[in-house]
Length: 143
Image 1 (cartoon, one colour):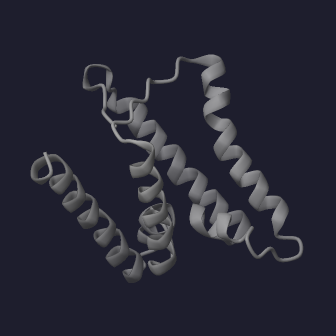
Image 2 (cartoon, one colour):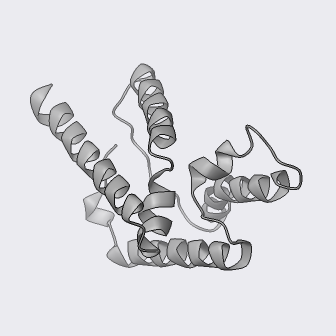
């Protein structure tokens, strides 16, 4: 995936980060739950009574947000420089990693660090380190 640096605007990135932070804060304030996507999705695999509605609404909001945005503005072009097999393998590895890491980047990186969780700080550092190593290997070792 590549970024169109000629049209990158830090203002929209900042606004998006602020919106994510406010949404995560509102979610924990009003629901007492962490806005970790893997946990929200995982809760649908073994649903508890009265627990499905808010999870489905949350996930529907994630899926509908770009659709609604696309109705009022031009969506950025997304270019993925990987094949289907690579994407499937990467998705499976991320899924396994979220189970072993007891959460994903949204749960640990956004919500956990903001709460001062040492476990989330270590998990986020591990996510970032693994990402740096992966990019280095893919771009500089394998090519």
